[in-house]
Length: 343
Image (cartoon, rainbow, N blue to C red; front, side):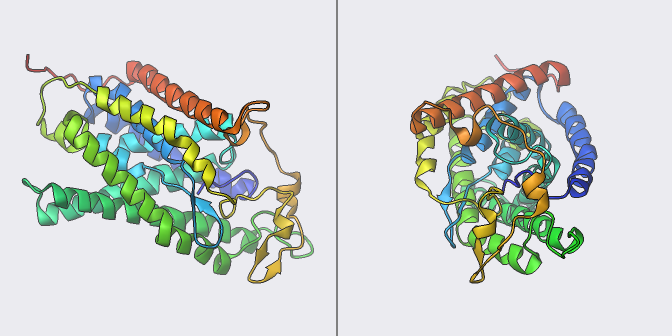
């Protein structure tokens, strides 16, 4: 799901980033009026859930790998607007510090995972719960969360596949070779959609429901529906939620068990040998070979001279801690609604 550097043309990256600017502006404005002031710092916890979910790589059909994103989950906890900002900040840290996803492709990755996924996933959730009603029916809410998160990730994957697939149609060199992603829509759509529909979307649904159910029972004041309805007007302990974050950090090395590269995330040094439909590509697109790249601090969540497992856990700690700190600082600027609590 993370589109790497130079797989999209600079024009495509510019258009996708421009498309996200009004989305980010709208999301920030909505957060300031929808969320209680004391809940704003906790968006960082939601962002940490997303960051950690994306570290748990799983094997997909076709020998590639994928992961959950947690976009719908954060929308259920803090609303789709908060989810948009939370996933965007998580993606920014991944790109700059860990080299996971391109810096130039940041706008495109945010469009797919921070816009399409949480807004569509939450739309499906609200559509189902409004039609069926949820009074005393937790099962309906959890089923709606599963369906919403599944479809949200599926639509995000489709958007990424289209962004990949239009590149060879629009950008070619004088010989007719693709300048950027070399696979057209006939390849990119099935290559992205089949593994996601069969495995990755199911992982997204399971992760979403598991965490949503846990937070519902331990910290119901962190559920967006309850915040909007003013159901909980008393302070709650969020120790169980932070304990869950810590447990996920400790378990992140499980993501190292999945071997292989995610589809569309091959390096310039290996793409020429990638076999598709029984034939190797045979060349390296010029944009990939000579494109811009940032040297991240911990590429692929690794650190030279450090044990792979230890480096992965350290990366998880750094990412989660930075997200909590960033949203604590942002909460001082954003403001938010004032809420009086029962004593």
